Length: 448
Image 1: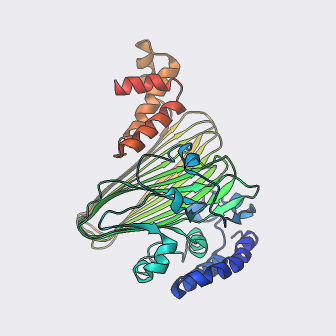
Image 2: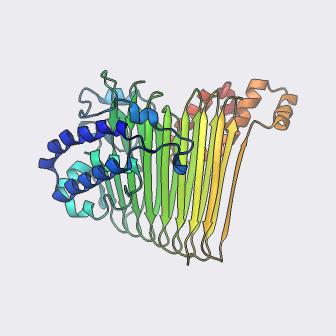
Image 3: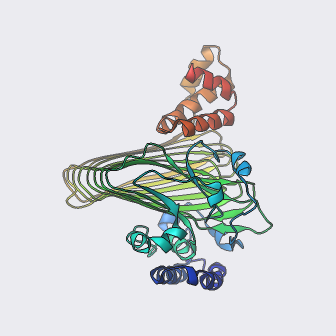
């Protein structure tokens, strides 16, 4: 059963949107938009009767009157960004406001072998280069939210690293939702990342808000990792507490590649992350990590797929959730080992820590193995703080509150340690210690 009626707003919006875009875009992009919109018209919004959406109800998104954000938040200034958490990490950045590139808020990237620009500009100046990968990784055939983004994305980031290039400084892509103007907005950011062979770089994607308003953020990221390359990719979701965030992240790795990603979810009322990584060359390594800190009635759903398409590849996946009050966490992880992908070594772990009786978690690790010489394991836990560990700390004169905070911090620190960017890691430590009672004491214990 689809929420058919509620998609009508999107279909009618597309007619006006398409008229505005035609004069600026290549014909292949126009055709792609129309095809994606047609597919969304057929699919509609998913319902909880579909297995992939069993624990996440997107009816509030479908029924809300979210209108396409046509403004670039022109009144925003650098000072506005600096007052937002993680708005300024001290890294070179490309800034997008409501999905539209803001060159006046962005830095210039002049390193040889590195292209960092807006998709709108890339469509005009590098159409053939973009067309090679755009819309080819994240398929909208069965994913309505990919179809929506493909139909409506009018800007975003284009990052290309030339073969045999090492980028020392991380690149920060900053997507900001502007202050509420009385209308609930929807934003469709798009990111295309292409790494040539034997390159090395680090990328940060941040989704932040300047106010506490309601909006719908629907980003899609496509990433190509060339042979013999190493990529560190971080995604920080810190949307408004009233926002809805449905994001899709699709990665294809070549031979002997090393791709590491860490996703941190702190904001939004409802979050759904679809992350798919395909090991499409021998000798590749993938590391997928995630941390979600939830309270109130927040809901986060992480749906991950690791595809071992070639032999002699290994992967590690670790997702941890800390849920307080009436928060809900969902994790469904699939490891698919295709026929012929011999010598696969894959491990998947999901751990959830419930801090209240009303917090709830669903987890479903899953293995699909079609090769016979492999080593694959998965595991999942849902529980509360260890009473024995609490008793041990209390017996050393540490208060109940501080003891709980110490154990929670220790649980989360394994994921924070995966963050290799000092500025981002320090900000995550600050957030976690601020989130915890007696957080400063905890920080002193672990750093002392």
